[in-house]
Every structure is written in structure tokens, then in C-alpha cells.
Image (cartoon, rainbow, N blue to C red):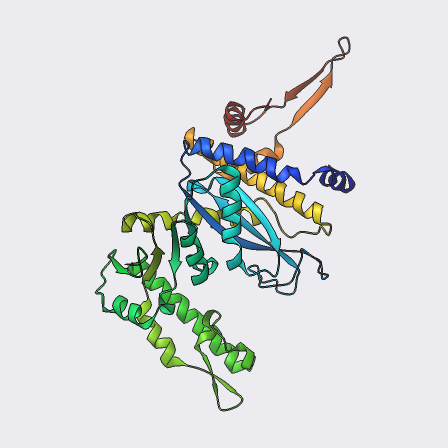
Length: 377
């Protein structure tokens, strides 16, 4: 087992140029896998918290996506191509507004890898109206999730006047080439209703327990259904809650691309790959919690995690290509008791290595990895 000091010494040896080198390798591999076509990219951010209470220039308390609002954190921005294949990442202060991160990062990556204005796909939370205008001014096309309820009344009226049926798609033109695409699904409608009712039940319990204050009245999540009665009493606005039912099942997308409406929706759905990447990093790759304090160690920790994600994606690809029944999780579990011994020949003094006996699944995994990964014995 590795000594902790050995791990720290390894992290200390990783210089600031390592990130750029790793990104170059990741980009080259993604370009190869996607057959030279990186015309569309996907961007998202997440937070990573630290098991510490003190802040510094990088670790800041802010809005935590992990629910750890009292812990210092950092933001991680991740850019991937189709299929979730990695292109690059960024590390940012934990109290930054995530909406200010996309354009500088896209510009930096585009310049570094000579990308010619790819279509940018991102969640609605990352792009304000100002950011959308900035993307347009810089010549980028984009697909973002629309916040339909926040659209101008004229647009909302047009949406609600549409008679939607299962799977139907409607288009509403805005200024210039910009348009909103709205689709409807009954499964989404049921999910929206379920989530709203669950949120209401949670609010009702909090109101009954007297746990809510004036500061709870905001537009965050289901708190938007709260209102102040008199000077002190917090109550639920049931009329507002019931009015939201008309939006159940509707999903909107804002775009200025020349793609067909169905293509826009299909491309946006690819965002789940980046959500999966964050989920995988936080669980399977155990990127969090982070106990490091020194900035260069934090950067090395994230760089190693990014590298691990790239390897994971390649393993996923080759398992699929070889039509293996092994899942990524199962493949990882199989390695826990795969052993290799090294020994020295007494006469020649040469060192040799030998893998110990494996079961059928381990042998299959080893054969696949040996075929696609260089340097595997």
C-alpha cells in the first residue's frame, strides 16, 4: 500500500504544465474517436467541496451543488465532445458566478486547439441573456435549455396557445435567427407533476414546523410558492402552485443554429454525457471529498481525476466495441483481485513479471485492455 507521504511527494512533482499536456492528449484522442469532427461541444460545471473550514484564494464558500454550503469549494468546468469524450477542463474559485465562465473557457479552448467556432450546448443556468448576446457577437452558434416560464409574456402566450400532443414539437421565432423549440412528452408531464407535488409536501412540512423565515421567500426551487401573509406569517401560494400545472410536460430549447428542430433536441439530450461524467467522477472515481490545502496539490488532484475519466471513457468504448458483457463497474471490481508478481532471474539478474491465474471474466478484461492500451503486460 502506498504511504501517504509518497502520494504527497508525487503530487508536489506535478508542475503547472501537466494540465496542458494532459488536455492535448485528451483532445487528440477525442478527435481520433470522433473521426476529426468536433463541430459541437458540451459544457457544464459542478462544485467540489473540501473537508475544511478555512478559505483561501481558490477555496471559497458559495452555492454548493453537493449541498455542502458551509464547506469551502471550487468549481470545475468540463468541456466534452459527442459521446462525452473529454476536451478540456478548468478550475475556478468556489464563489464565482458560473454564468461568467463559459465564454472565456470556450475562447481559450478554441484558440488552443484551433476549433472553428463549434456549436456550444449548455444548460440554461450557465447562459444569461448577456452571455447569449456575447456568444452571438463572437460568431458562435448555441443550443441552451430554455426557461419557458421566464420568457416574455408574449412568448409564453404563444407557447400556451399551442395544442400539444405526445412527441409534438413547436417552433417560436424570436429576434433574428434565434428561436425557441418546445416539445411535449406525457412521461415528462407525469414526472413534473410528481416532483412539484413532492416539493409542495416538503414545503407544507416546513411551514407546519415553523422552520421558514422571510429569507426563505425567493425563487430558488419550490420556495417560489411561498408568500408572506401580514408581517410575519409564511404561507404557501396554492394558486401559483396550481397555475404551474399548465407547463407540465413542456421542455424548451433556445438556439440560433441552422439545425432542424429535431436535431437541436437530440443534440441537447447529449448533455447527459457530461452529467454522467460528473456523477462518475464523484462516485466511481472518488474525486471528492478533497482534503488537500495547497493549490498545486488541488490542481494535481483534479488533473489525475480528469485523466482517470478519459481512461474510463476509453475503457467504456472498447468494451462496447468488443461486444463485452462487462460493465465499467464490473470491470473495476474485477481488477481488485488481479495480481502480478515480479521476480529476478538469479543468473541474468533480469526482472520479469507474471500475471497470476485469472478467472474467465478477468482473462477477457485483460485481453481487451492489452489489445487497446499500450504498455499493459
